[in-house]
Image 1 (cartoon, helix red, strand yellow):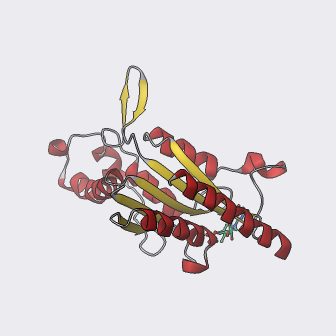
Image 2 (cartoon, protein in one colour; image 1 turned 45 degrees about the vertical axis):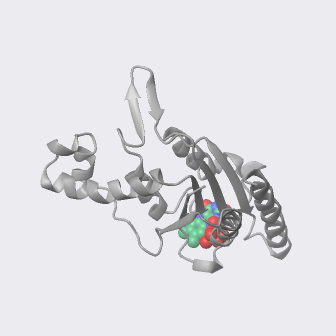
Length: 206
Ligand SMILES: Cc1cc2nc3c(=O)[nH]c(=O)nc-3n(C[C@H](O)[C@H](O)[C@H](O)COP(=O)(O)O)c2cc1C
């Protein structure tokens, strides 16, 4: 393992549960692979622009056919795709906001899901181009979505799995920190469960 990409999206810094557990996983990976380089992409601290018109038209053109505005719009996206493509493991920390992702993380996704760069289309349908990578996704939620009535409202984990799979990253481990807003006992259980899940992920990478 040479490169780890650590994508953070909670504005709460180290108070964030997704940040804390994802951070432990990165530390553990780093301890097992001391030579690995960790690249941190904190989309809460350094928000990415929403994609606009020039991005939309430029993304389907070869670089030499792009207008200066399209080339400019695609330059940041290219850098983000390069960063992701260089990673062997992606560790992604995601709070649940309104049953889905914070818009800061969605903006990152809009930049990295790119025809010709991270997926292709052919007569066989879409194909993810970022094969052979592993991902660890740490999701934090106030409520519980892995079981029970709210399961159908989880557009966070299901969406992240779908979008990572679409670009070819199908080896995805998920750590859920859930029920953190449901009282002291539920928070204690959420922490213990997330710790156990993180240890299981660490064993997978051993
Ligand atoms: C804007 C906003 C929207 C939220 N929406 C949800 C939600 O739909 N479901 C839920 O269970 N928790 C929701 N929460 C609670 C967060 O998911 C919870 O506080 C989580 O710990 C945030 O992740 P973090 O600790 O990594 O910052 C929301 C919090 C905020 C600030």
